Length: 78
Image (cartoon, rainbow, N blue to C red):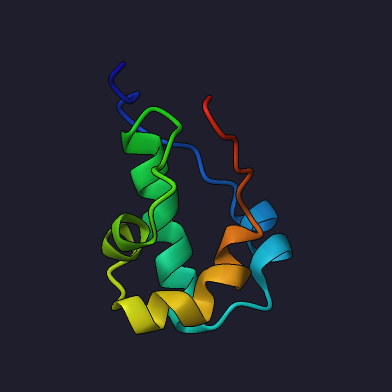
């Protein structure tokens, strides 16, 4: 299933929920949202892949993962 030609982003909602993020965390989160949208709503449960989508090193991803992944719902086998 291909992604629609655009993705709506409601900035008021975004900033209400993400005001505590650092600049780097905002970047990683937005990149993961873009990857999620481009991949039909699913991301792999794989830290190396998620770090790559977020343009992070493994060490950077390990440091921000708990904060960023709190925004996502993890479903096994779905």
